[in-house]
Image (cartoon, rainbow, N blue to C red; front, side, top):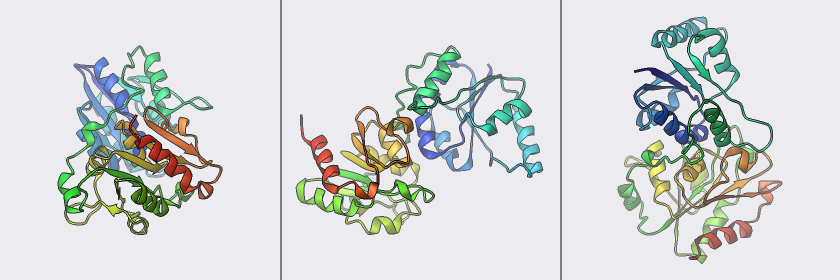
Length: 303
């Protein structure tokens, strides 16, 4: 039995998109131990992932943190990996290859300029190494989703519902469409669907300003990764910004709509695929509620 290392540090949306690549790596190495190296926030996700045997974490130390670098190098070298799949493909992981783990065979890649998505880059990287890439372009994170029926019942969500994802990383406020409150009212007036939000730790006040039902845990805590996925899996439709939970919706095969300003391309981020579509605007502030509502209702209409 060999030992295989896969590297994926983050971020959240990128992590969930690796499911298909991990599934194909697992199939190529059915009898080997598959170990993933990630950062602490994503340990619990990979520990639940059915394609992974074991998880290592590291904190990506700064250059002057020599003790941390020494510890990291000692741990990685002691594992005696036979092959490394670098799904992060960063300057940091390039340094690992050149300075820390020189002995294993490395399978590296890079994203091309233009409109190549992370999924297409993964496929090209794995195919070049001789792997079949049956699942790489079609991640399915159903294994993340917990049963949230008690949470929905406690919040009075008893029928079909739509999930809104109005937040984004605090570092990227330009990704936030500012009209979710008006969209919620319009959906309530024109459809039979309830509207819910799934606030993260920094989005509670944002979601309170929207006349939708925020979903929290049994003790009013924000949902963890798995409760979030469960709430999204049960939705009839999802509308969100370019952010990690919206990627979860796309990777669960949900129908939905991602809202994009000029900050990024829907194709390049991997969000524009299957039943999950995107609307682009030169400035998200100027994207009308009526435009988004029209697309939502058209998608929900039978046939």
